[in-house]
Length: 112
Length: 114
Image (cartoon, rainbow over all chains, first blue to last red; front, top):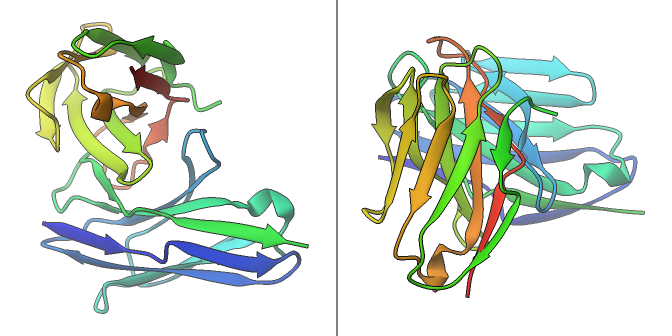
């Protein structure tokens, strides 16, 4: 089976940096995804890691350590519009287009 | 706009009834996924189809069924509805058989069972 853990809620200040952690336990691993979801809207893709290390994309970066079963999403220069839920998801262990298994998400509130 | 289209956007129905949710994937995407999202459970994978064939099954109840048609659109059928089935149902799609392929979500169908 697969188990994905993330903090339920976080609060950060506009302009600051926030790190959202995700730990996972899976019987196999074939990639980790981060999605952003505003309340009542569709999840939108942010990043993908399959090898260890940091992937940077503008204000967003994602890190993966496969040996530790650990990832984080780093958001820099926070803006009010970044208030949303951030979902960590792991791809099932088989190659190909297998489903993503999602954590329950971290609700981030950005305050002035 | 992800390119994944879902209808209807909102649906209110009574317990015991049956509804059908429809999804058109992004142009060219062969895989379609259905997810259920309720407040306390997060995004739960229900079922996946790839080019018309069932590919993977998650926590889908026996009262629920799905299919993917030759034109690649998919339908999720929910029957004998219960209050607890009230949720946001997402369809998602992805491209050919490659592990890194991103899954793109539609806007979802809000189902309220009263």
